[in-house]
Figure 1: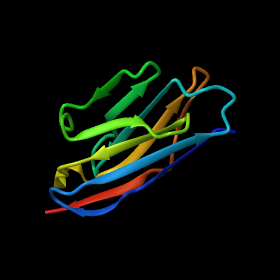
Figure 2: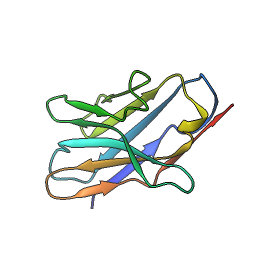
Figure 3: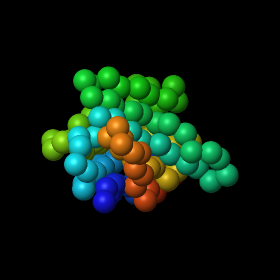
Figure 4: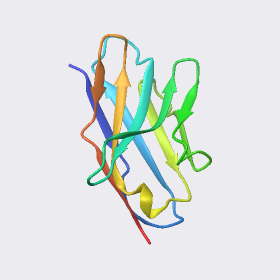
Length: 115
């Protein structure tokens, strides 16, 4: 059974930084795509950043230049470095992992940016 676990959320002041980590386990296949999504209260879940095998990345316009997604040492792990955080970045951040068989979600981690 595939399990996706996020960590690293918390409370930070505007302008600060946080790093989120995500690890997927239990898959017989390498995750060929991993990404971060977020959902703010009263809003739909939206894409933040994705990383696919080969190293291609994709970012939401709202985070370009501030957030960086990268492989975090071991396979099937990914991190999101978030700099210059804004109150609008406040949301629950979810990790998604795909291995060509299925798409798997973590339980989410709260990021709160105070003004």
